[in-house]
Image (cartoon, rainbow, N blue to C red; front, side, top):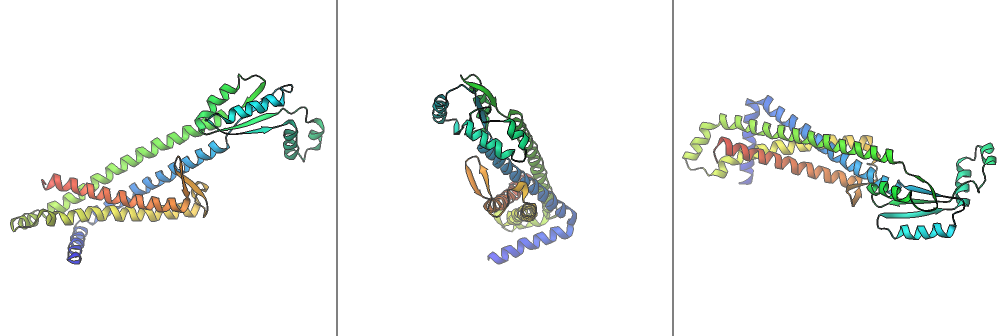
Length: 300
């Protein structure tokens, strides 16, 4: 019974293809582009999320202290900052450590090394925040602390990155919505052609006692077929793209990505999740488009 139903649905597809080849191919093409854009948007969003998390882990505010400010006071501040829920970690750099770092960086510049002593370089605290958005407010607070000579915070770089991340989210989301709408309309148009061409046949089937499910079955199958085939083609294209160029440097064998702010997975697991999501979206889009067309043109 299952095989005969499937054969009937496939025969219906073959008939539609022979009559409206261009419409069928256009349907699959537009839906494939939709899912490629959707998948690329997901990949970009995950890349941005991962990059932002990396910035949160690496970006820091550095407090440089006055030469005469006591080390005990700096360590007391360190303990106070470590108790702040907004702060991820605090690292103390003494004058001696600062001089050693300076020496390592400029080891090929002997003249420069001769001109600098450890007494010139200030002690400092390197502070990383739990969230990137907290860095700016923390930097402002630290500027008014006693003994702080200078606060270093690359505010422009971080804010520019967040700005472009938001632009990509908005533009990408807009494109996805536009192409989802186009795909939905094309599914409906294709099914309308099928319904119009089979109007007499459907009417006769209803007269001889065919059930609603029997009449609607081939049409629902047609929409699902278009959605799943398009999503499958898009998945193959995206897998080739992501793995061949290691998109954003994230898709190596052992690299990890943040699919949600607090959820980190291996990149290959994300690719599997992406394919599953595209297939689900493909099936839903095809099914909903079919249902809408059936209700509109068959008055169900």
